[in-house]
Image (cartoon, rainbow, N blue to C red; front, side, top):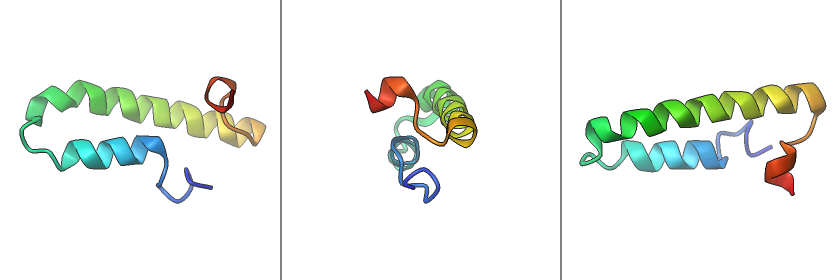
Length: 57
């Protein structure tokens, strides 16, 4: 439910990263990696109806 409401760890990290102007271009790689992880997580959830095992355990 938190993923669907954009309150998951990926969104929280992205919000924090976007609010710190000093990070600038340094955060670009982290932003891309976070976006990929979020997509992977959402795809898994849609297929299995549960979170990734490594996150749940």
